[in-house]
Image (spheres, rainbow, N blue to C red):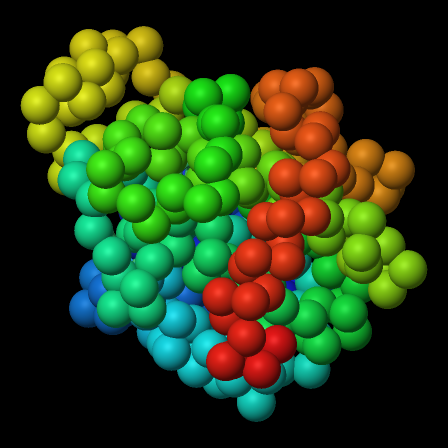
Length: 280
Ligand SMILES: NC(=O)c1ccc[n+]([C@@H]2O[C@H](COP(=O)([O-])OP(=O)(O)OC[C@H]3O[C@@H](n4cnc5c(N)ncnc54)[C@H](OP(=O)(O)O)[C@@H]3O)[C@@H](O)[C@H]2O)c1
């Protein structure tokens, strides 16, 4: 049986970790792109021990440092012939405005731009693998109201606003890939995993932490939260649904603003300009 090679970001915790375990059980060769190498060494051992799958590999990649993202993609290109599944899963929300060392607002770079660069740099492998690109979005994309001029403006920053925009960008990115790369055999899907008990709110403070804490008793497990990612990575015959947004393994209509082709194109062009120095 041919081995499926799968690249996942954010597998050291929560939904990404549960996704990695589930795909390891389905015999995928896993390339885990992580920023915490110590934590990932322990994770690799656990996956191998609990699933029997020894085909688990760690690649350093901090999505808030684009040089490491480009280096991770180069490392994969030097090691692999193709990739069949890319799961852009890592993400976060931040109380306070901060710029990354690349000069972009952190939520924007972690949740969107880092994955944009990674995906573009991996395109030769993804094309050879006729890959599925899966972007973990959120129902909070419905809070998105993108103002492309103010992404880097601390005066206009709110944690929820930046997060909602970034998750809307995940859907724009999904639809753009589906449109631009269909002729290359590449498909793309976005998803909402549910409201999931993970480390997501561990670094939040104040009202935001309280809001997420109050929701904790109603949250689903990481394993349940990973189900749609695993479904999209493994289900046969999904191609006609390329570009769709999935919730509980079913395509669902996203917010009206997610269909805005002008904003979608603007995001693509802006992102290309922002990563242009990495030669994508
Ligand atoms: N939890 C929910 O209810 C929920 C709902 C909707 C959507 N989501 C989405 O689901 C995805 C996974 O979130 P989660 O709930 O599983 O959260 P989580 O437990 O906090 O996991 C986040 C993952 O992202 C990684 N990460 C954070 N910053 C990174 C960076 N700079 N570079 C590389 N990796 C980085 C983390 O690595 P470390 O282990 O090193 O911190 C961790 O592996 C996110 O995209 C989130 O927006 C979650």
